[in-house]
Amino acid sequence: MVNLRLLQINYVHLEGDLKFLPAELKWLQWKDSKLEHLWRGRGHKVAEKLMLLNLTGCFNLTAIPDLSGNGALKKLILEHCTGLTKLHNSIGNLQTLVHLNLRECSNLIQLPNDVSGLTKLENLILSGCLQLKQLPNNMDRMVSLKELLLDDTAIISLPESIFRLTKLEKLSLNRCKYLKGLPDLIGKLCSLKEISLNRCEKLEKIPNSMGSLANLEKLSLLWCTSLSIIPDSIGNLKSLMEFYIYGSPIKELPVSIGSLSNLKELSTGNGQFLSRLPDSVGGLNSLVVLKIDQTLITDLPHEIGALKTLEKLESPNFYNHN
Image: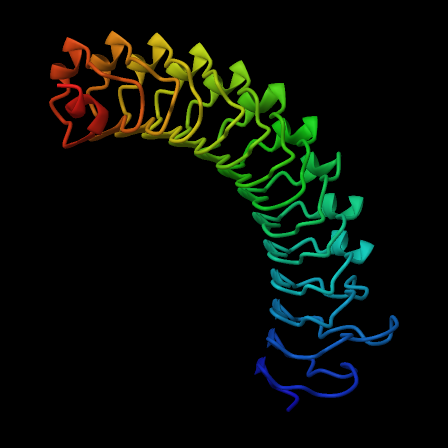
């Protein structure tokens, strides 16, 4: 099998660990096995031409060995490897790695500082890493990063250096129950298109600098139960198309919201303290969906009649009071 390029041995349970692999192997997928070790010692490295290594669901895998010799590796998928507690420092030597998936590695405690050496990495998926409390302070060296997913982690705060990730397009921190805020310099993430902070129960404020995110298209703050104020700077988000604050105790929407000329959906329902919409909503000339159900709003401003593109209005309280 010296010319073998692709090897898939899913759901197969073999004893021992890997020692020899074909030199031409480029794709190795071994899902849901009882594999405990890949290989031991520096003499047993994976084939140098390997481009994808997928070990999804290898629950007994507790560690990743030295990967220094895997100079061609582009995708490393360790999803649902719940026995994994740490990564080998050599991971930072994978100069060609583009995709690193550690989703649901629920016992992973930390990332090594060396991970910042992944200068070509575009996707970093850490969602479901329940024990992960912080990211390396030097991760700003990951200059190619486009997607950072941190849902369901124990993250308390993001490193201040994150503002240097100028290619980042998606930042997701859903259900990060210990997160209290975002770095003040987050507004320097000039490529950011989507921020999702749903059910971040301790999130108390949004930094004013967020108004500098000129390319932001989606901002989701659903059920952020400690968030009561939206900064005026939100009106500067000229590219914003979706804005969700459903279930968050927002007291009022800033007048500047009327400047969101590209906004297509605004969801403020289930806001128990929201009693009115600002007259400036008449400036939302691209709005298609407006949700204000289960709020204290009993009347709509006359300016809402200017919303020629509006197709859906959810306002049961309004109708019940008339």
